[in-house]
Every structure is written in C-alpha cells, then in structure tokens.
Image 1 (cartoon, rainbow, N blue to C red):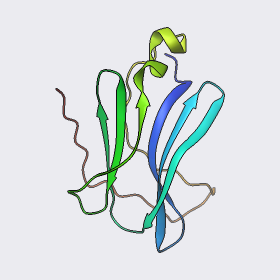
Image 2: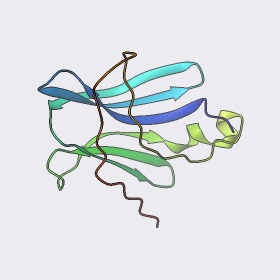
Image 3: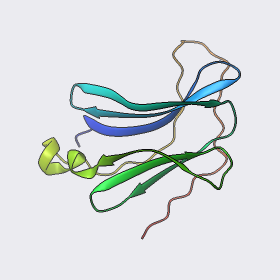
Length: 115
C-alpha cells in the first residue's frame, strides 16, 4: 500500500478564541497547504464529497451551510499516477505538537454516505 500521497482536511487550534480550517496535500516528498481559513473557535463540521474526478472539501460553522475550502483532482491519488496501490482511507484523528498535553478532540459523530 502506498501512502505517500494524500489530502488532509483538518482543524488547527490557534488559541482559545480562534482556529483554522486547513486543506493540505502531500504528493510524495512535497507537502503544501492549499488553503487555510481562520474561524472563531466553535464546533465545526467538515465535509468531503467525491465525484469521478474531484474531491470537494468544505466546512460548516452552523451545521447547515457549508463553505467550500477547495477541490482536489482524484487522479493524483490513483495507482497509475502515484506508482502503487493507494486505496481510499478515510478516518478521524487528533494530534498535538507537544509531547504532553491536556488538549482533546471530541468527535460527536461520523457519517459516510455511499452512492
């Protein structure tokens, strides 16, 4: 399995009153932040929609209205382009930049809708 190329949509804490919604991609050794949007600290819903040739990434501050943060081309994650089986992996995780932290992440729900 080749995991050298992927897209990441995540929330980064910037203090007690603000955070950032970030769209990042990795292609081999290259990692790039495609877009970063500063928003007030609150509950945020993230959304990824897959079509034939694109993934669309969005976020919502109110749970109903989603704002686009960008689209990425699906071919860059394909077996033919990436040079090995990439598969599709979707998951939630939390991480910290410090060794010891009292920070936490709450995931109230996760929903996957197949077409």
